[in-house]
View (cartoon, rainbow, N blue to C red):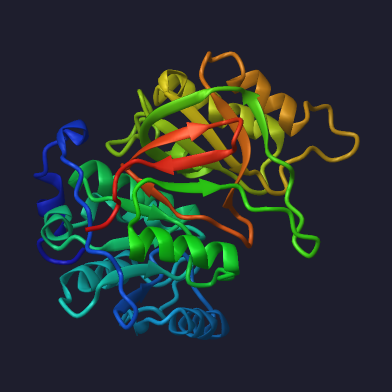
Length: 331
C-alpha cells in the first residue's frame, strides 16, 4: 500500500448523491495525455499502437512509469497501478488520463484511491470495460464527470474520432450522439426500441459485468432517475439475465428514467442451448419496467465507439436512437 493513500480514501463521506458535478477542463490539440493501464497488462505492440493513435489525434503522450509492469493478469501490482493513476492526476503538465486497455484489476484499486487528490485536480478520465469501476467510483466520490469511450488500444475510426472531438474538445450543447450508420466493412446490429419513448436524467453505467460486481459495495451504482447505459461482451443470455436481475434488485435499475443498451457483442446462445435469445432476455428483464429502453446504440466492445460522459444530464430518445447531452461535460 502506498503511504497515506488508503486513509485519505476511507475518510471521504459516503454521500455520492450530494456531490456537485465537477467538469474537467476540455482537451486541446497539442495537450499531453497520461497513458495508464489500471487493469490488465498491455504488450509493447499494443502500447505502441495506442501512442501512435493518440499522437495522430493531435495529442502528446506521457506513458505511466509502470505501464510496462506485469503481474499475472494485471499490469503490475495494485501499488504500481495506483501510483500511475495518482501521478497523472498530480502532474500539472498532464491534461487528461487515458486508459490504454481494460481487462481486469480496476476494482481492486477503489478503496485506496486518493479521491481528494482527484477532486482537487479534475481531469478527463476516459476508457470503458474494466474502466467502468474507476468511472463509477470516482464520479460517486468526487462528482468528476468520467468519460466512457475508446481505450488507447481502440480503433479511432471516423465515428469514434468525431465524438471524441465533439465531447472532449468542443463541448457543444446540446450535443446529439446518434447510432452509427451501417457500414458494409463493419456491420453492426440494427438498433431497435424495446420500449418507445423519451427520458431525461444523468448518464450512469458502463459494462454490465462490472456494474453487477460493484452492487452491494461502497461503490454500488444507483440508477434511480438516471439514464442507465449498459454494454456487454461474450456472456450467455442466462448470465445477462442474472446480472440485470441483480441491478434491478440492488441498484434500482427498475427506477431508472430510461435505459440505453449498447451492442452486446457475442452474447447469443450457441446452437443447441436451452436458452432465450439475447433479444428475448432483454425484453424479459427490461421490457416491463414502464420506462424507455433502446438496444444497439454505438458503444461497447466494438470498433466504433461513442463517448458518454458519466454524470451529465441528457435526453434519451428511443425512436430516434439518440442520446442528447443537455450540459457541457467539460469546462
